[in-house]
Structure formats: structure tokens, C-alpha cells
Image (tube, rainbow over all chains, first blue to last red; front, side, top):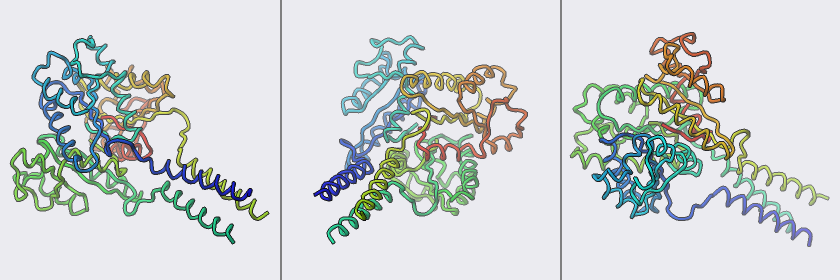
Amino acid sequence: MKMKAAFFVLTSALLLALAAVSQTPAGPKHHAVFQLSEPEGEDWGALIRHVNNMRTAFEKDGGVEIEVVFYSAGLNMLRKTNTAYEQPLKQLADKGVTLAACQNAMRAMNVKTEDLFPFAKQVDSGVAELVRKQEAGWAYIH
Amino acid sequence: MKMKAAFFVLTSALLLALAAVSQTPAGPKHHAVFQLSEPEGEDWGALIRHVNNMRTAFEKDGGVEIEVVFYSAGLNMLRKTNTAYEQPLKQLADKGVTLAACQNAMRAMNVKTEDLFPFAKQVDSGVAELVRKQEAGWAYIH
Amino acid sequence: MKMKAAFFVLTSALLLALAAVSQTPAGPKHHAVFQLSEPEGEDWGALIRHVNNMRTAFEKDGGVEIEVVFYSAGLNMLRKTNTAYEQPLKQLADKGVTLAACQNAMRAMNVKTEDLFPFAKQVDSGVAELVRKQEAGWAYIH
């Protein structure tokens, strides 16, 4: 009887250990965080293109969860004044892509919540967010 | 007798779990994927230099498997018209470095397979390739 | 008696496996390696700002160990001639941030140890160092 109990305890512990090793994620199979810290120019259009290309590439391979972190001069891409990119950014947000403004950049550049597109999220620190995501197993693209 | 069998099963499971944890890779000890998305200029020469420096640094430490993913304006580095870099790139390919052109960039820039150096490989999406490699444990350098 | 011994061995092995899985780090909870390879300009001030912002963001979340790897034209930021950034860099070093010069860049640019700030460390290869840190679980920021 005691042996059976020991066997049960050991088997449960083993299953837990194996579960921890396999780390099966819920939701999309792939996870990527993009950094957008550049001023207006070639990089802004490239971001839209790359996010869409990545979504297409992983469409038949489990899907991909994407977050873009905007900071430094890149924060301007999320401002309402940036009408040229409002539609493509809104389309990304509508597809579930997280577009996150860095609150440190907002303070430094005196940008308020109401200055940002309504679909923009916020994170306390852009660089810390990039670390958190990588620690959680997300791939990083800059 | 039953105890011996249980012991055997548990020990096997433990060894499997430990093997999964240690994740012993076959081949080179280190793995790195480089992103080359910049137009012609300083970054192209730097890429050649950095790949060679990394290979040298890991020569006595298990070796390194390297892939360079070329996309956006960086795709031009793999075109036959880029005679200035043909030799150093061919030398990297001969050493086993994978030089991969993004097919999305090829379509967008109307670049055909026959326009690329014969030693160039292709991937469906440059950014998706960077994600796959990082998910497989490769370090990312941009 | 033999069963007790077997139970002890298995339990010990399980605990070791679980310890390996959990990979409890000593010291700070977070780890990040920055790449600084750009010539003097906007990127130098941004580096100081981003390192300080990250430290602040993780202050109440276990702390963060940070290393900055300086190479290519970025090596110049660690030269004594760069008086404009001596104080902010020294302040980072005093807080425990590792500022590491790439010895390949030093050779290529004929920079000697005595040309660097006294608080600068050195690594054999900047790009190899970025790989080693990522392999050790550090997040990468460029």
C-alpha cells in the first residue's frame, strides 16, 4: 500500500516535470515582438509590410501573436497626427496585433493618451517590455 | 517483480526528462542568425567582418552554425550585379554559412532566382525565418 | 530496505530534474545585453536613456543585470576622447552595468586599452559575446 502511494507520488512528480519541460503554449504557435524606434521614413512602411508578411507566413503553421513596441522617435508613428499610417495600423490592431506605446517616450516627448490612436496600448517602458517578451519565449525582431 | 518493473519505468522516464532538459544539440555548439536588411553601404562590409569574427571566436569553443537572412533593401547584396561582394559572400557559403534570400522581398523587388548568386538559398519570409530560428534556440544579431 | 533506498534515489533525481527545469537564477531576476555599434549621434544618448529606463522599470521587479557591448563605430563611445559621455557612462558602470569593448574592433581601429575609459571591460568578439549572452538566457536589445 505504501509502495503504491510512493509510486503515485513519483509518477505525478514526473508528469509535472515533463509538463514543465514541454511548456505547451496556449493560443498561437508563434510569438514575435517588433521594435519600432525609428523616425518617420522607410522603416515605418517596412514595419507594416513585415508584420503582414509574418502573419501570412505563419497562417498555415499555427498562427503568430505579434506585439509592436513603439519608442524613441518611433512613438510618433502612433500619434493621431500620423494620418498616413492610420489605416494600415488600425488594420493590424483589428487583426489582433498589439501596438504598444512606451510611457517613458510619451513623458519625454510630452505625448498624452489622447494624442495616440485609440487602438494604441501602452507599456511602462519599451525596452523593459522587449525583455519581458523575450523572457517569455517571444522572438525579437528589429 | 512488480516493483522492479515500476523502478525501471520511473528511471527511464527520469532519463528522458533529463535528456529533454539538457537539450544536447548535434553539430556546432553555437547557432546564430544575422539579419541583413540595409541598403548598400557600411552595413554590408560589416556583415562579412562580423560573420568571420564570430566564426573565429567560436573556433575553439565548439564551432558556430550561421545563417544570414537577406531582406528589404538588403536583398540586393545577394544579386549577381553586386560583384564587389561576390567573393567574400562565396567564401562564407563555402565555409557552410547559409545565405538566405527572402522570397517576399524577391517578389516585391522583382528579383528572380537567376538574378541571385548561385550559392544563395531562399526562405519564404525573412522575418518568419528569424522567428523560427530564435524559437529553435538560435541567437539573433542585427 | 532496498525499496527505501530506491525511493530515496528516485526522489533525489526528481528534485535535481525539477531544479534544472526551474533554472532559478542567482542575483537579479532579469538579464539584458545591449548592442551599441553606431557612430556618434542620436543612438549614443538613447543608449544611456534606455539603460536607465530599464533599470527603473525593473527596480521593483527583481532588478536587472545589464551588459552593453560596444563594437564597430560604437567602440568610440568608450574612448577617453569621448568626454561628452564620460559621466553618464561612469554612472552606469558605478551602478554595476558592464560596458564591454570588442577586442576585434579595438584591433581594427587601433584602439589600445589605455585609450578606453578605465571602467570599460573587454570581450574577445562583440558578436560572439551577444551570442553567448543570449544562449545564457539574456534578452537582446539593439
